[in-house]
Amino acid sequence: MPKKKTKLDRFADLTWNDIEKWAGGKIVSRGKTYQRQGRVSDLAVTDDGETAMEIADCMPVIVGALDRSSLDTPKKLIWALDAVLDDQFELCEAFAEYLYRRHSKSAWHTLADRLLARLKGLKSTKGADDFSRNYERDRLSDWTIHAMEAEGLASSGVRPGPA
Image (cartoon, rainbow, N blue to C red; front, side):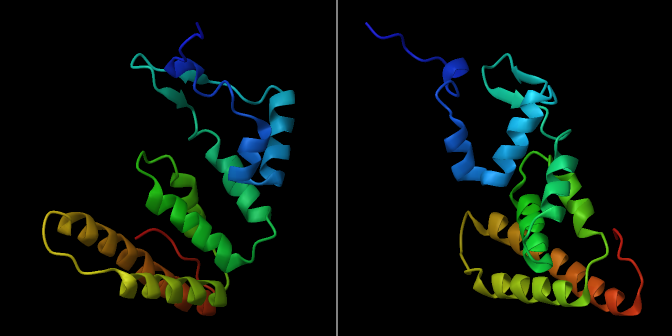
């Protein structure tokens, strides 16, 4: 009779190809290098059986990879912002810091336009999900304001910073 997989075994069948589909070839190549160099550490399983990683310690490396990637600056900003917005565990503070760095006026303008389009696309709902929708709208609004302010500051040469 085949052995039933435990929560500890759920990543046992994960391959580099699986990771590459999710993260891309450059990230996987860098990950393999880090593994060979012994720079991957602190993988653990918590008492309740969930897989927990010291991801927050890796975020500056990931932000550096984003900064050096071939994406244009507006796409980098959008990628970083999506990481912050999707972060339920407050692991992506390094991406928020990236969003407070100096970037070109045109990159901030593009980000603001895309965020305004997202805000416009939020559907009005009535009922139990109003809190979630309002929370999402408020966060998008805050980042839209930041992008617009940073766009103005970029043209003046002043560095944007947290409010």
